[in-house]
Image (tube, rainbow, N blue to C red):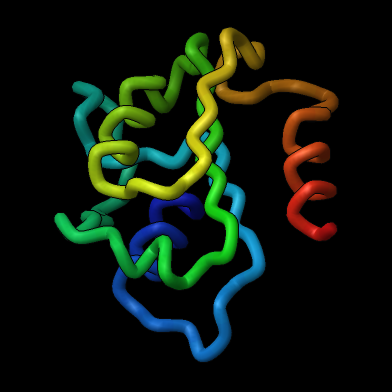
Length: 113
């Protein structure tokens, strides 16, 4: 629930100082998976523009083989936020059950330069 909580918070509250970068790994967009509670009662507003304004670099990372948060949620975010980097990896062993994640390390290193 942490990722949707953070997306909701950053889309509803203006930060005093903009975050240099935010990385959301498989953030659920809504509760659209039957039988699963992906959002724990959190609901995103229709306007997510403040989410982008609060962050210098916004990265949303998904996996096609995620068995918890469907990769289709990437499309839903893309429709609401225009300038985020949204990546959908072919496979990350389900819900990012990986020992290493070199792609996010590259993103972080690029953002701090």
